[in-house]
Length: 122
Image 1 (cartoon, rainbow, N blue to C red):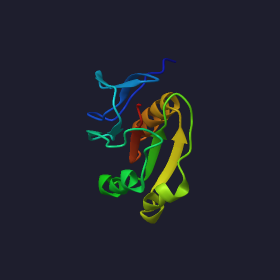
Image 2 (spheres, rainbow, N blue to C red):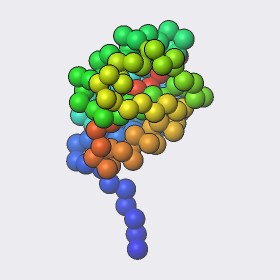
Image 3 (cartoon, rainbow, N blue to C red):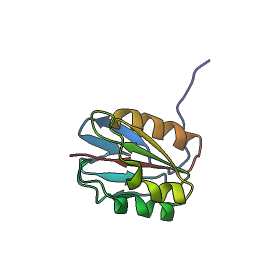
């Protein structure tokens, strides 16, 4: 039996990644970005240390159920007061390094889950 990777037609997927970049459908991004199956948008979050509650407020407009936060080369957890808007909107948050977040995002998109990938590149 041969196994083949599949994803929903037209969905944005991560095609390559490193500690300081991501490629979405072959297009390289090296600044903070939010990726969903339908869109790729710049994210105003400049660095982990500069994260604010405002950086997490727009996710409810994306219609997602979960946000995967990629915090760079290593996993770092934001203070819960910064992500209170996600909880209020009943949106889950998973925090991991960039590479793990990219892999997890591709799996969830293939399962047609409503997921956003938020990546911080400093």
